[in-house]
Length: 170
Image (cartoon, rainbow, N blue to C red; front, side, top):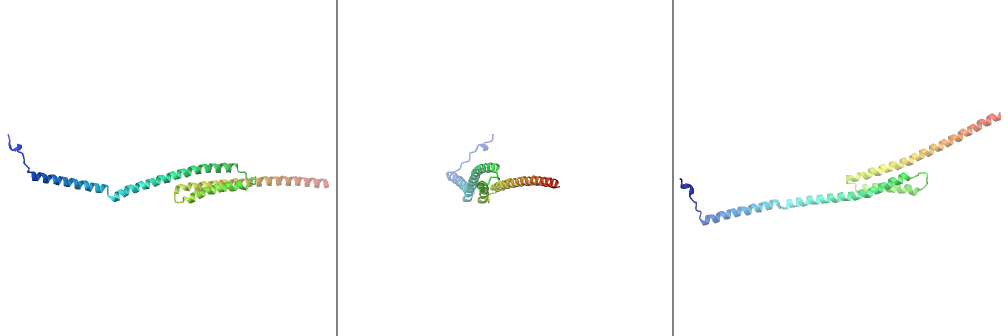
């Protein structure tokens, strides 16, 4: 058996205290540097700036959702008014009311022009304006067609009457 393996190494008290101080010093320096890296001013600002950006984005999304809810009811009202609008009735206030509501959609877009989501308001306003103009134009075409048809019938009757007069005058 080998007795040399069972030898104990004695370390004096001064070396033990020195080793403990080194270990504690490295631990404190390591913990301090780790804390400084994790909690440095630029990193904290970066975390909070991201939080501010996310909260601002969420607020804009909630605002847009509320605006959409208002716009949906306004669009339903515009559709109802255009469907019930009769150009033959000389009610200027109805026409002005429809055009005012369409222009309100445009104003919503103009107020939030930088946000691309509001472009839908401009497209809706253009669509409703075209639909309203087409309804008026088609009514005018239809009324012109009816007037032309009545004039043609009157002309044909007058022509028949003249033919009768010419035949009876002979």
